[in-house]
Length: 280
Ligand SMILES: Cc1ncc(C[n+]2csc(CCOP(=O)(O)OP(=O)(O)O)c2C)c(N)n1
Ligand code: SF4
Image 1: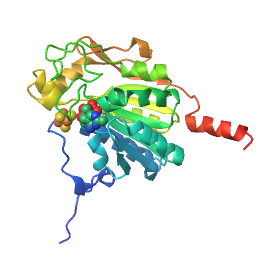
Image 2 (image 1 turned 90 degrees about the horizontal axis):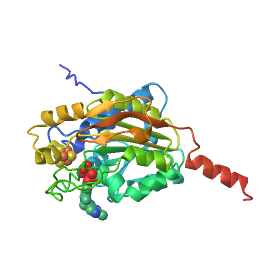
Image 3 (image 1 turned 45 degrees about the horizontal axis):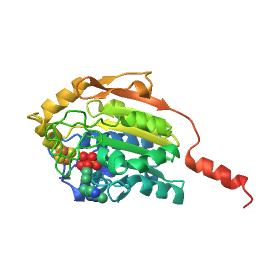
Image 4 (image 1 turned 90 degrees about the vertical axis):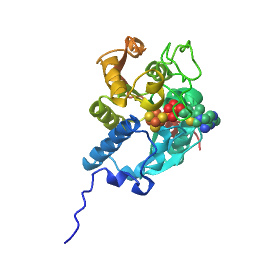
């Protein structure tokens, strides 16, 4: 009798030989990755994207391990350097669609300067920043996104720093698209990724995620469900709100939504205009 295997529609985007993955039970990274894969799958089924053009670029961290599990052309680059790598990909072959998928430490910590300048240039790429509010892979040090007063291994009395609001940062630096979602609302995230994938210029999507093993456990959450439930209470979906008005506070709330949709020419288009306008 023939063996019938159930093939999941997303299997074609994964490398089963690299599984099982290294993420802890209850980690939010898988939800974020699955939203991305579902977005690509739907766009391809609708005939609006060719997934073979996607180049999936990560830095270093728990989130960044995703590049090993996906079946795209992928690169696992040094910590903080995913954005310049993606920029090189786009400039070498403007037909490609670079997608950076990395952690908050990678994108706005060590890679913060690359982030600002890629947004300023309106560099053609989609950046998905999985924000678990901590340096997770290395054991829970404070990140530039760690909310105020939160205990981390390097802020044992509570975080005295003011965190970045990455939404405001991306907007002010010049990104064409800026949104913040959460693993508690994966369908909204998937729809936003679909939209951003089809745009030009710098597109930034922050995804609030849960790290139950480090962030959650260190501040007293006893299970992934407890942390997930808390995050669900913290996030507030708001439409038609300016990036400056978005909140980023573990107590008062964190604003979710789509905050910037601009149609400015991306870097590649501007570059081509300059080159064609010159004498060469
Ligand atoms: C140049 C450099 N500095 C420091 C490290 C150590 N390091 C590895 S991952 C990481 C932080 C990871 O945090 P984040 O980017 O937020 O990803 P997460 O693990 O939370 O998903 C650090 C500091 C490194 N690998 N390379
Ligand atoms: S340490 Fe945290 S972010 Fe890393 S895999 Fe475990 S739960 Fe996920």
